[in-house]
Amino acid sequence: MQVALVSTYDLGHQPFGLASPAKWLKRAGAEVHCVDLAVRPFAKATALLAQAQLIAFYLPMHTATRLAVKAIQRIKRLNPTAHLCAYGLYAPLNADYLQEVGVQTILGGEFEQGLVDLYQSLLAQQPVALPPVSLARQQFQVPDRSSLPPLAEYAQVHVGQGEARLVGYTEASRGCKHTCRHCPIVPVYNGRFRIIQQEIVLADIQQQIAAGARHITFGDPDFFNGPGHAIPLVEALHQEYPEVTYDVTIKIEHLLKHKRFLPVLGDTGCLFVTSAVEAVDDNILAVLNKGHTRADFIKAVALFREIGLVLNPTFVTFTPWTTARGYAELLATLDNLGLIEHVAPIQYAIRLLLPAGSKLLELAEVRELVRPFDETALVNPWSHPDPRLDELYEEVFRLVKANQKSGESRRIHFERVWQAAVDLLPLGDVPVRSGVLTDVVVPTLSESWY
Image (tube, rainbow, N blue to C red; front, side):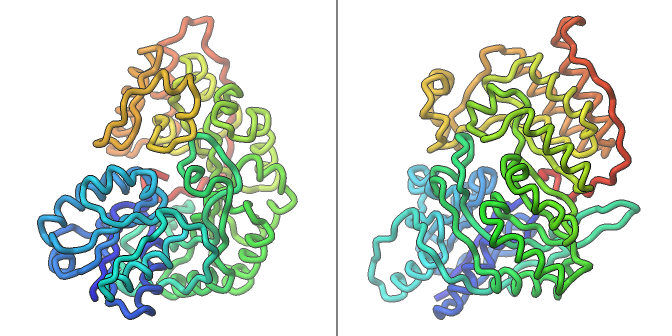
């Protein structure tokens, strides 16, 4: 039986979410083909998709899900008898709508074994009832990347002085120990996480280095959910490949709690650490249940500067609780902390998403703001109580798109966003900026949504 595993968007990564189940399915006897529509046009996969008996879409994020719905509609016309499956984080969150558009099987959480079970049931023509979410612990297998496009077609990391490195991508764990209300991981994993065995992770990295990777992105939602797993992993990586760099994602809370491990990251080739700061307003942080405060963020910045690590902060800049003064205060804080070069332009225009299953919908104050679920956008739409903030969002997003075309520096872009923000404020209410300049070279990934 032919199986097609399809990715529509994965932040510029060569998808682990295709490569991992590809190996499981091949060992079960399937003829597996990986289709990455993010880097290859649909037309090039038409013949393959027309012949597959099982077509499974990997849905790790909101954008990927929206793009997959469009692809599903095309595939149903092309191959109406194929069994359609959706798997990954956003599959169970959008199960009702996905089933409406033709998806027959939904798999979330730890999906590899579920895909094998589905394949075997179709092969035997014996229907099987599969749970939409499985958190069963798995013994992973080394991902099979042989039918994916080469790494040169994916993101690169720019490290300064014109040097760019091919980027590989792997995962050392899934899920998260924490329950931030806005996070899509929480409705699926509910405070739990699962590790991928060290020997599997290292073998996956090894094959990507052999294919040309000189930098590895660890896609774990939080690399320090299990530092006892993470630290030996990067030490082993550095011992075998001392010239290879990497990046990880870690909560502010964990950066402070496990600060004794931060020098190890620096010593083993960590180029930067991404951290979902989200806001510098303690009220917003409390609503989101982030587990850190504005003061904690400032402590983390100081700690990174002392150690010599690069922090890549990300934000949810537009929420129902964002004020005009608060938005300008966020910008001033970034300037005063010397972080302008650290923040990607898109981060100034991130609007809170309320997908199906969001824990924020449990709050009465949120339910009063939202409109009925929009199946096209796959979110519960909301409008800001102050219409000026929605207008500011539109203007900042316009500036982001203009920046993507012009390639202007992050500092020039920041000044444009700053002006748009302070135009909403009385002169006496504009936050003070000290304009801290740093000479740190900030690595950047070529995918514009990083």
